[in-house]
Structure formats: structure tokens, C-alpha cells
Length: 71
Image 1: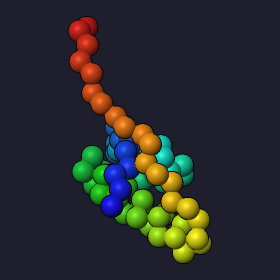
Image 2 (image 1 turned 90 degrees about the horizontal axis):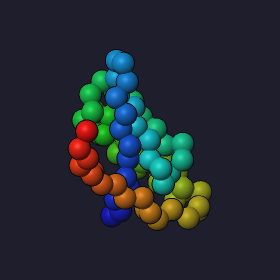
Image 3 (image 1 turned 45 degrees about the vertical axis):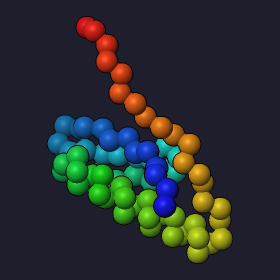
């Protein structure tokens, strides 16, 4: 099992997401939770395709943190 970081962005009427470690893997949904689930599916689908084509699976390298700032 591997953990890939995803970035979720809120748009005007939906959410969209991408995975920095897997360029081109994207998803969009009506809610943040739906978008995260769709990203999980998209990542699994992408990794299955890489396996079938005997292409090495990229190791996760991205991490994310929240920092608090005073404004």
C-alpha cells in the first residue's frame, strides 16, 4: 500500500483535484469527499495501467502540512 498526496481545490460550483506525484491524474466532484473518492479511483486505475504496461510505479514523494499564520 502507498499513500499519494492529492491537492483539492474549491471552484465556483465544484471541487477538483490532482496528484503531484502522478501527473495527469485528476478528478472533479460536487463535494470535497466525492472528489477525494474519485481521486482514489483514478489513482488506482492509473497504477493498474502502469502495472499492465510494465512501467515502474512512481514512489510517493510529496507531503503536505498546514501551517498557522496570523493575519
